[in-house]
Length: 611
Image 1 (cartoon, rainbow, N blue to C red):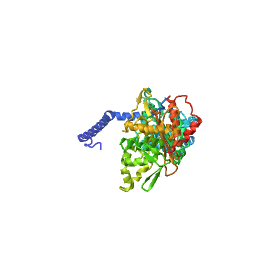
Image 2 (image 1 turned 90 degrees about the vertical axis):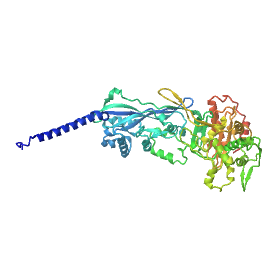
Image 3 (image 1 turned 30 degrees about the horizontal axis):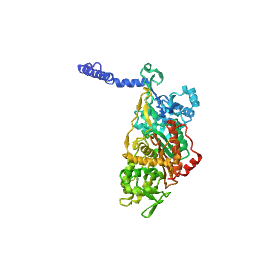
Image 4 (image 1 turned 90 degrees about the horizontal axis):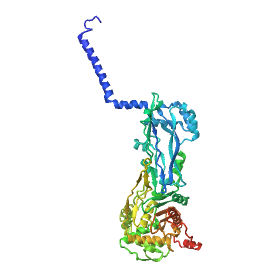
């Protein structure tokens, strides 16, 4: 073959040179592509194989009350982690026995972590106790890929709970992670309710990264770039609250063993001084690992401790709503402050009799509030009509969310013509449906938060501030404090009308015959209104709304207790005690006040007219 005259022919030589030249050009082109075009991308991949980033979790922001008392802190918590790329599945049983976990649960977490990043540590168990941690430390050398890290968890520094206001954090769900994968990773904790949820982006801080050099087996060789490339974590911002921790603590104790809610607001800015929903639960149960049994118990509890009665309920307000009816009639000139009716203890409309608890005789609008005369308002609501009733109810903020900064609340319900037409059919309802609206019954639905906002507007002369818990946000690093602005609107009710309503409320508390005498605070003048709302499912609900001091109000309160009966005897004393404590804290109540004589106290109690 080699002797063939064609073996070394020019044609063959040319073909061979062409093939070799083409191969050279291809290799040269590929080299150019790798070095010049893909340099950055391949450099990153190479660096990923030789550099490992360890996340440094930031410290979550703190919360302080209005006096600077730390109420929500963070403490250390130990979390066991597994790096999927380095973990040997043969050690799964040993790790499960040590952590007292199911092998499948650990395997599932490792699988989920590998899908995210096989080189990043995956949290396996949080809030590990010191005994377990010590046992792990002893055998850590035999468990490649297993480690632990120090994280932070919520701790609470006072005896108050404020569960539904402050909220809680828990491990991120798959659904939440899918929406925020650019910020969070599996195992992160996020705010799940209350302020923890509403201010999550400000509280959480920013993650840091510590870089290490690793070999081909993923073993750490030391700090990368001498630590110069590390990114420090940034602590979350602090929340400075309007909350008065001592008032909150007192309110919780007074509402213990009840089902209901209490909300106290600053009528000059809408700041939340206290918010209680009962029954509740200890928020610290969510600060570490919440046992599944406990979570199921909270969810199945028939008293609904997870439910925020302060913002999510829709109760009839009873007689506390009478000032809305009076405002509509006075402002639109349907009556004036001298208008009188004669209360005989009942009002007949059609073939139905609507009763009152007392015979009040000749009564004007101020006296009707003071004595809580139902007959006056049975007649008055018919005079103003359904649409005017709905209009003025909405002017006071009912029928829509308040915009409170804890994110969960109901709009409530204010019936109007459209509502009745939809529910009963157009032309199939009569004026008789309106009568019970006059005393806050029927289909009206309000929350205690809306009622506190209403009381605050009555206190300040007609301004509706958006209720809010956070007064300011403080940057831990710069110490800069960002004051938060909150929108407001006016009810549109004239000052002269407000003066009439306020005088009636003052008499409820301060004058004989008033139904709110048990809310009286000796040493100052205060104002309020009791309510006893009928409940078709059981005993009546007890209401009280009020404010103090009368001339220059600094606190407005709404109290609602389910199935407690009369507002004057059940809700009013709680409101009075809360107001008294707040005024003492703010130095608005004289330190030494002469106590009333025993006979005066008895007289005061016996003069309470229940509504």
